[in-house]
Length: 223
Image (cartoon, rainbow, N blue to C red; front, side, top):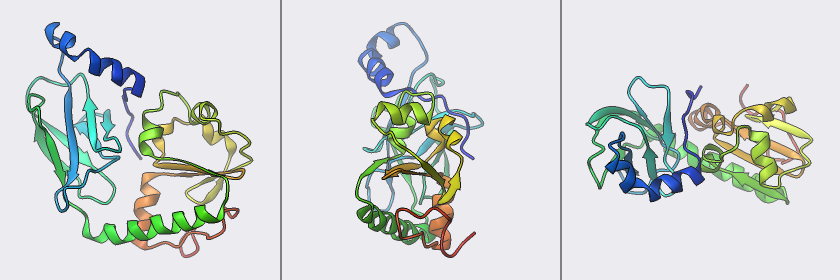
């Protein structure tokens, strides 16, 4: 399970970015800014989790690999950095570094499985017609308290069935916070939600998902 977050909504993030100089002048705690990349390819890594060692709050990297973590100690500290498809790392990061780049090592046993899983999702999406999809960045930095609020704000209505990790789920799950999910997609009147734990398991075990967009009964070759 992903730990509790203290995430800065996108609108507030922009406000804070614009007032960085003022914050520094007032002597408040600095922020940690940087970019997460793959050590193998140099490509940016979206959805990486960055948190102070031993703390239960943190942030995710955006789709461009950048991350922003406010209110942290003004000295080098140990941070946990992890992302789906990469080895988890404990590393010392310095908020005074203006060009901070965090490198993660790809997990060899995950990369091929993740690619296969994303291909399955894409093929099923193409069969589903009307599709709305939201990734981790959108779900984490949405500024809404619940997933249901977030969906309404984005014009997603008419949900009649919810699938959590490919299995039927009560509609009340929409009362949860959006950051608890790795991916959300609506096809027709079906809303599919995926946790990071399931995506990781599906990639490692090479699970085959149901091919039809209207089916919600679990993976074909797994419980």
